[in-house]
Length: 297
Ligand SMILES: NC(=O)c1ccc[n+]([C@@H]2O[C@H](COP(=O)([O-])OP(=O)(O)OC[C@H]3O[C@@H](n4cnc5c(N)ncnc54)[C@H](OP(=O)(O)O)[C@@H]3O)[C@@H](O)[C@H]2O)c1
Image 1 (cartoon, rainbow, N blue to C red):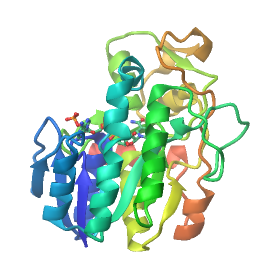
Image 2 (cartoon, helix red, strand yellow; image 1 turned 180 degrees about the vertical axis):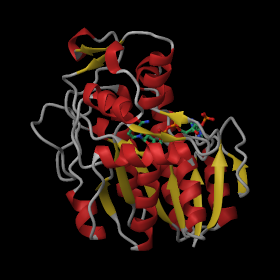
Image 3 (cartoon, rainbow, N blue to C red; image 1 turned 45 degrees about the vertical axis):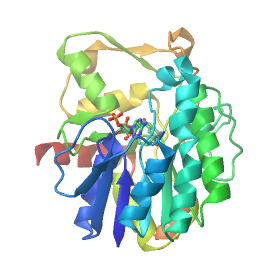
Image 4 (cartoon, rainbow, N blue to C red; image 1 turned 90 degrees about the vertical axis):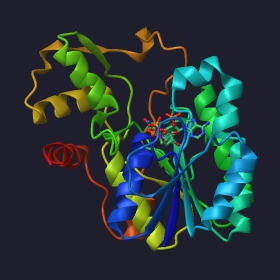
């Protein structure tokens, strides 16, 4: 299949390119500010230039478009709400239309932050979104446009994405931040009252390949099957890396100085993706084991 990925220099996009190549798809990609070193056909694209979005899709004529391009800085979105909407929501109109015109299917990536966080237990795909910050609202608006205007779209909601960036080959996301703080002998405060289902980027990317191979549509939660606090995630990761977790302090969301509200619980129920693909999603521990293996490769 011809697979076009938008945002290939991001953590997730770089893993999607790698997974699509592993599956022997014909792989195309767009980058925004930095040219990655992938040996694939690439074009520069700013998704806010909607004419270019249509032009790129038309020129590649893909079977699938996987949209990993987004403004992901949650506090940055709060500071620049118009920009968040211009990147995370408005281009979905042109993208959906361009996909329909080229008979391409669209897999659009979204977030657990569409949920409000007040629920007890994991959110499934039927739960009602209720975003509490600009980022979540802009991503939900993007989902809504895609659902309304694209033909049989797939929407994959992820949570707390981490892993190896396939262009820079370096660790990215929460474990990278944690290791660098510990290496600097900084004391880190990790929340014990926020619950998430961390998504390992390469696991999500290979799950996307399974979803598109099956030709599925609709909303899917793609994350690990564990529901943990950042403090638990940090401890498990350090244990596996044989790092001393002594500098890790227990913190609370209530003491956070972040500009944007963080929801208390956005754990994702992954039952649907497991049922449709006939296999289980990994636990956090097995994802961390795999990450450590990837780091050693
Ligand atoms: N990170 C998380 O914890 C998390 C959690 C849940 C869901 N998600 C979702 O997962 C997806 C991928 O996120 P990620 O973690 O891979 O984030 P990322 O590493 O920040 O990647 C985002 C990519 O989007 C590109 N981009 C930004 N503005 C653009 C624009 N105007 N036009 C075109 N491309 C643009 C960036 O390119 P430049 O850097 O060159 O601007 C970057 O390559 C997003 O949809 C995000 O909402 C992420």
